[in-house]
Image (cartoon, rainbow, N blue to C red; front, side):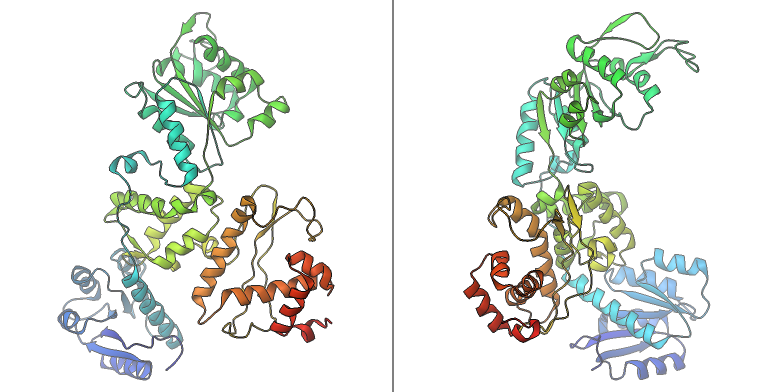
Length: 528
């Protein structure tokens, strides 16, 4: 049986009114392990589908009676999961667009390139198998959770929820910190929606998105004639938000002059419009957010210290997604339902696809996850999101550990040393993880012990990646394979010095010598 086709007999239905095409398909797939069925019209093909139950349909577009596009529409009504490849010798831009809009798996031009045809059929059958194994995520959240959008059951998120509840019961000023894309504005809105001000206005303003010369007017308003273009009096956000809540996002980018006026509002609730002399009094709750370390900005005199302390009454820190990977399934469930509500029924998702999402490092955090899922929903060719629907940066074998101060190591070729006996003969993948610092690899007194939680968190993405690799290899034994490569690399790092290599690995020299003998690497590395 040629490589690429499944061991189990899979069924292919060809719908084409040309006898030559049917003959060619029989010759191409005769020894492939695929059970080929043929129909000479769209009507005949539709009658055969319930009887044959094919795994894949290939249909010509130009046929007497039902054409290929109309046949595809009716197949979608019979079985929305069945992949269909359309074929034609008269390809046009509009036909290709219409075929993909109707949900065709792919679009193929005649005459066929046989290797391309075989590969396309192989890929479509694999997608059909993966789709059958895909799961529709069961609702794991309460309806109000889907409405608020602040999702998570991990320890760090539970702490966030507790602080939201405490802040909602008071009027205290809050400072929300965290990387971009972690959901700081959602937290601010959640505090507002659960507070006594929930029926009053909520306004959000991004301090980094508004030019410095306009930010003050945006916040405090201006009088007619205050500056060129000020043709009428305009109230600012503080006036519009009286008795409500004002969310100041990216407050670390606020210019010093505006910081001074914000401090005054926090102290006594008063301000003047730009170009005005009348003092206005407001009752506004301020929630601020930043992705910058404000303490460092204070030390550099870029941010007012007194304002920092006024804002930092209660701090809510949003953890990055890489620190709460256990929440990824919940977030996938949430986003697929949210996207499905906008574009039709929610997509299902394969377990292997979920495993890929859970092993990725997510430098763009929750916002990146949402964008990846939106893209996958658009490009997926069926009712399920498969691995092939994910972008390359998520699928790449290297773990992009984007921790602060990390130096990413490019993913090079896999090691070429002999495979571990019994490990399936497959080489280890190139790790490509980020290394903290660039000094001597020999452990020092400052190196955290292996049980340090920070170290455990850093290597977890690599461990997940190793298991993902192992699932794709037949009969692989992860532990011996990894252990052998570690011994080889330690000996290379120390130029064969077994004392230093053992220290680097955290084992005794006697244990190292046993591993060298066990894995048969003495001669390969010329060590004694």
